[in-house]
Amino acid sequence: MSRVLGKNHKQKNTQNLGTGECAVDVKERKNCCYSGISEKECQTKGCCFDSEYPGVPWCFHPLIKKALKTAMENKVFWLLTISLIVGLSNALLPPGECDVQPKARENCGYPGITEIECSARQCCFNSDAPDSPWCFKPVPVEGCPFLESGYFSL
Image 1: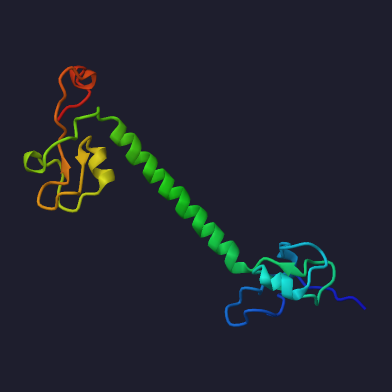
Image 2: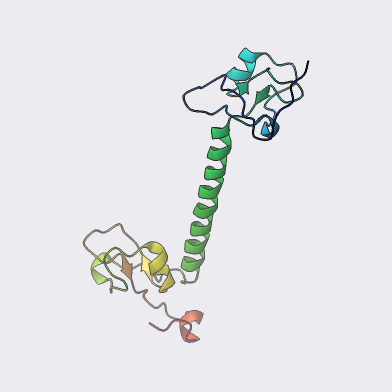
């Protein structure tokens, strides 16, 4: 006699009972390994095992791995986006313009300014010297096409 599963049926927890990682709706199970895998081998791979219901994967991915994967993908996306913004902002300043000794730096920001905010002001950012401005005006380089064209208006 086979069971008919209702729309809202949740499988019982057979592993990690306290965390609910394996409380995956049987219709949403994603196969973790090959058909016929043993319960021990399945769990060794970090997956959940439940052979109570026919016609659905018995070895399947736990919920937490899906949530963790999504969270990690989001963090990687934003990290790459911020890196790209900072990289492009700093690329606008010609080489040598940010080579300013700490005591000669002219402030271009405010206490606590971030590198992204500083770059948006077309200024240099260097937090290596604690007793000098971290966001400071670039020094014009002679013969610089950006400055001759009026690109920067500091």
